[in-house]
Length: 137
Image (cartoon, rainbow, N blue to C red; front, side, top):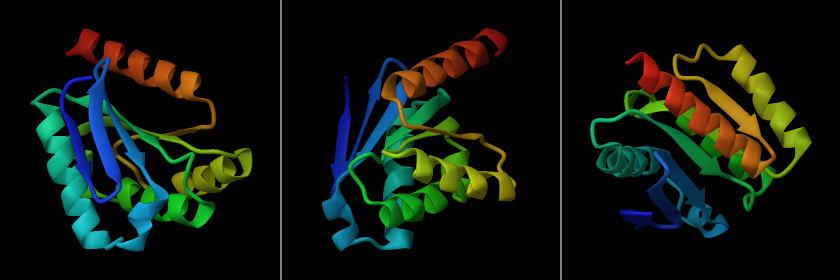
């Protein structure tokens, strides 16, 4: 783990060529959509270092409504899309995974969203995605 960026309940770092993000429930006490998107963009661009990496967001400690809110914000963020290879969301329940997957189907996403309940599966997807992208480019 090299650089760790923390901001109002958001923690971002790079681990094994994956940009990891963890949000605490306290983050949503001061949540502001515009400010949050800008803060995430700035933090990710610092960690991006001109190399596309998957973004793994750990939402397991959040309640369902907060998870949906941050999923929609990040999924629809054009600015964040320009910095990441893929977005992988780690959620705590299968029902939330299904709900987010339905939202995923209805949207027109350039950068793919993947939703998992198992950390090891999410991590393996990120590592595989990174390796395939770098073999091609």
